[in-house]
Image 1 (tube, rainbow, N blue to C red):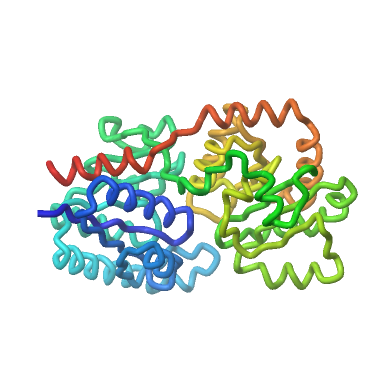
Image 2 (cartoon, rainbow, N blue to C red):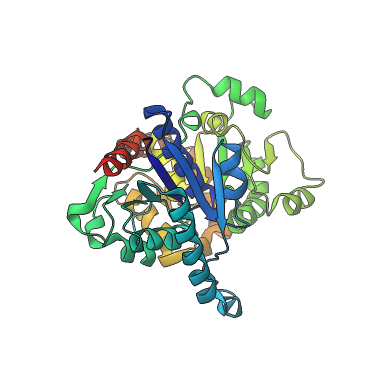
Length: 366
């Protein structure tokens, strides 16, 4: 009988892309493996997972709204409803193993799995585990992590360092600089900054670019500017009359490999998935961790690189006033850029999707 696997989680590209990478690795190992995704209604995964060729079922679940306390009134009822729905999904699908990658749906699904004695694996992407994963980790068969020191959060005997799954096509940048420059409409001979706030975008990073635009143009440095879907319209309106050949404003980067290939310097948030990609492409990076995440885990992610002299970190509060100055100084400092590239490359863990998939199959066969 074919192995049946439920993969749960999502919310952002940082959770969805690794989940799909694990699913693809499982399919490469055995095309007969049956895979079902469980996500949160209204979130990105409900669109992105079917586009990747997999079935997904949504739970009516949300995260804790720190900035809107009144929205949390019905959260306990939604959690209970989601656990009941997750139990029903598990009973119908009858998985051999479940996998949680983080995101709103992961908690209810893994909790329901524990109630029904279905073994589960947690893929903890960050260097600082959230409270849900810390609780669920006690009963997990295995916790796959990307950073050292995770025994602070999980039983040491259950931890396996695998790294975070990445999209292989995204980090395949060898000899693509000229192709990238042509398709992105920029010069391959000028210094280029890639700014990415992730799939949803970053208000702080976008404001920082608007503030520093004149300095960027004066330095004759190019910018590949991924605004994110929430900010694209606003940024394009603010850029009216300020258009310039050195600046390419994009809502979403469908060919991230070309953006990485063209970049001499990357400015980004400090999501675990982005970090995993940057370690492989070996680009110097300035990280501006988002303060709007649980347990400030992005700051901890960035610090894991900074402590190895593998990245520059700037606080969200200081970005608007200082980011462009720091970026322009760094991009002209060839020795520092080379050092950062070398050190971030040392932290790369490749083939994480294969390593995790092997553990999923092992657990399913136990």
